[in-house]
Amino acid sequence: MASLHTFMQDNERHLAQLEELRALLQEQHAAAVAELGAVTSESGDQLRLAAHAAEIEAAIERMDRGLYGTCRRCGAFIPLAVLFRAPQEQRCPGCAEQSSTMEMAV
Image 1 (cartoon, rainbow, N blue to C red):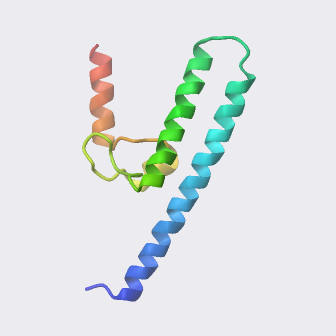
Image 2: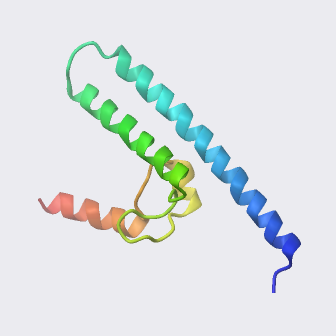
């Protein structure tokens, strides 16, 4: 059985990782909004940037509600490596793969 000290260390490590991910999300959101503001004509780029900014906002909202890091589809945990690579990700690798497979079939 893990000691209280070990539990507290794990908790502190997880909180630090969440803060690191929050900072990464906020940086990416600011960059996406700035890039969106620089686009002068309506185009596919504008739609892509707006969608990306919305994904980041949704991830920050999930973090604020305590749901960040869990798959929106199945509820499984999203691996930390995936979140650091794409902090706005809201699907576990299995659901993301299923979704991309279905999109390719259409």
